[in-house]
Image 1: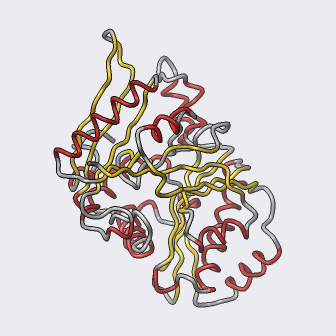
Image 2: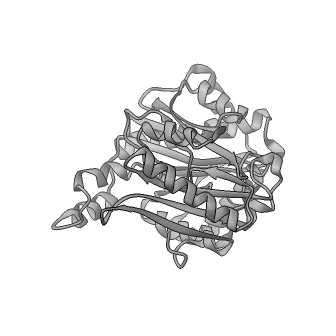
Length: 342
């Protein structure tokens, strides 16, 4: 993530990493960074001219936190930024927001996790809440409510609709389809910054080992791809027992898990429907169909019992409605903060 040679995000971004040391020991860290694409977005969508970021934040105590944030702000001022937004680590597509609810459950794959004290430290530095990101959890061993099942069956009778698995042998082509839908579907959302091809290429390399064809769906309407849903088995469940080391046999255990993964939790990091269909009954129908087909595969083939959808913007009424209709509940809240730099 932090290596410009391995993270395509740096093709349109720059940053500086800082460590805090006390008595020769590292006691904290922070990144300060700016994204040239974020600077071109409308300010009403959250970023825009003057918006800089900090993230990758960890601190052992409040004094360390204060000094790290001040140093990140100084770097942003030197770059001409007049607002600091954080934590965002590093891209808004990676790990945005500070965990403010849900500390009792370990993070799923590619989700941040923070000590409860951080909220007070950040707010004491003059930061105000600007946007909440939520995750929803649900029991996926249970059938969805009857109304959802009726909607799914109606879609299955519609010859215009095809829900298909991705073809991993055509990874690049499938990724391009998903990228096109994603950039269209999310373009009006708060915090939107277009995903670029270099980012997709590098993310693809990282995610390919945990991409399984029956957990990623593309929906076609009249032969045109119009929606997608990506689901990942929770890799953290396999990593945690290794205790931070691949030796002596951790690497073999991890490779075996990747070959035939079993995971209690499945995470849905991304889904989207093209803008022209949003707020339509068709959009909801396609979403429910993809969710149901992936739910069945997750339970049958991977032994999953729990789903986690997110993050979802607190004002994304369409996704909130879908999450509530399948009887999921908010289990984690991530807060993004903002401060004007004087």
